[in-house]
Amino acid sequence: MKKYNFVHAGLLLLPTMLLLAAFTHMPTLKTVWRSFFSIRTNVTGEFTPSNYQFLFEDDVLWQVLSNSFWYMTITVPASIIIALTMAIWVNARLSGRSLLRLAYFTPTVLPMISVANIWLFFYSPEIGLFNSVMGWFGHDGYNWLGDPQTALGSIMLMTVWKEAGFFMIFYLAALQGIRPDLYQAARLEGAGNLTVLWRITLPLLMPTTLFVLVNAVLNAFKMVDHLFILTKGGPNNASNLLLYYIYENAFSFFDTAYAAALTVLLLIILVFLAFIQFGVLERRIHYR
Picture 1 (cartoon, rainbow, N blue to C red):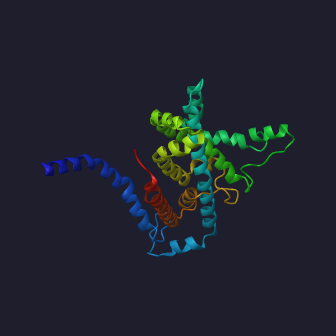
Picture 2: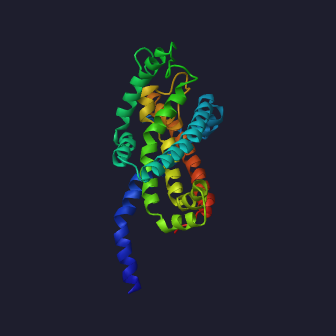
């Protein structure tokens, strides 16, 4: 009977395992293998570790890694904090809260290319919305996407606007799953709003926070669409991020071998972050 159950479970998992092997594991192994060869497009090269040696010599890569670090460090906490704040607000008994939830969630359902084009209009130097508003107060405005000092920050602002509403849905669902009697008991003990938030709401939301954190970090490292429309990594790589740099090397410079090495570097970074998230943070989370 146990043998039958094992075979039955294996057959049920077989389609998923085949898909994972075909579209995840095999491409990953092939990428690692190609990163050790001096291959450009379809030209066969020889085995060499030069691609990984060049990682330490590539000044553009270090700038890209710095951009990616600051992009993740700012957008991830900002998106989570804003999403939690919006979820707590729309979870309260407000008039018209359904419309408010819809307004918060609307940016999420828009395609990334559409969002990038909308914000391209906002950031346009001459006719852009932001500079037009600043012009009412006598300010000439900025070249938001053309200035190295503001390009990356402009991308961050758009990202937070796009993702906060998506994460709000998960927090809202988690808030509605918290038992009301916990709040009633806290009120009877004389707990204030901050005490209830810190001692009840936030600890019970930690599983959701971990889920949102993992998704936010992954989104931070897979940003390509917005950069392609808005800045193409410029000016002077000021807004270039790691995945877009991989795309540039593979499809603009046709250096597939170095792009493979960069992809391996990205995988190592993601594995390290996953270890921190699941090996360290998850131990501090109590599931109900």
